[in-house]
Length: 330
Image (cartoon, rainbow, N blue to C red):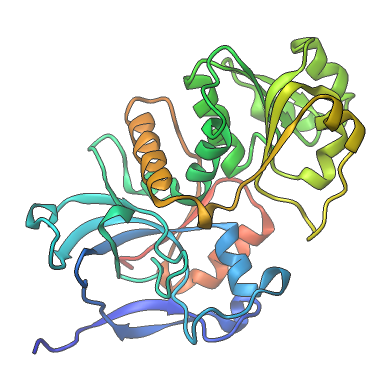
């Protein structure tokens, strides 16, 4: 029997504030079971969903006695389990869903995942970007494409500067849609200005601004805050339009029923942990290909050492600009 070797990792045994519950130290290095690969990680992506699990958002409990957080990452396959091609060893991959209904995620030197959760990376896609694609990218991809092609359609992306919103806008533009993005304040317009899409501010009569661009209404809305934006959405949605929403601030949402009813609107709720595995894999492959073609980009905000995971969580909770990553090699 092989001796178990140690690795550095971050974990929590109870929920609470990042600085109070996140621990950095040494744990056993995992071994891949049948159908799994082990990835020597270089980056671990930190997402709002990771920090919400850690803090017990909406009453969620500890799913396991100990959790190594984070679902997204990038690295190199260094070992494979039974039934997995040996040719994968040495391959650079993007990892997604590592801590989705699983105990141990990517906040470590190594992670073990089913083979389908490790997507090969071309040379054009760096590890920082690869570790930033999973949760926000898959959510964005599903929001844009779950209800069919968007070529020739008009897509409104609420919160276009956010992690999901920015990727959704890029995917929709690349797919041939007319894209309108929103920002909270007029002062944010310059930072969000893009030759590939229209941008409007929520503090300056957004209904009129959107209708000036899309007189017949928008076909799809990618919604970051359904509770806050429901009235605006109802005022600009086209007949048979779709509102695809992935977040609201509370556990209940009031919707303006008559305008949504008479416009025959479909409201699609998106919970990324529960997308079909094949949907997730296809989305990741599309995202990686989009990055390689120069159609999709990600703004990296901070890359911190693994030991500074608590600070990384606090940056994500503060909503600062750019993606937050951990360098798992230091």
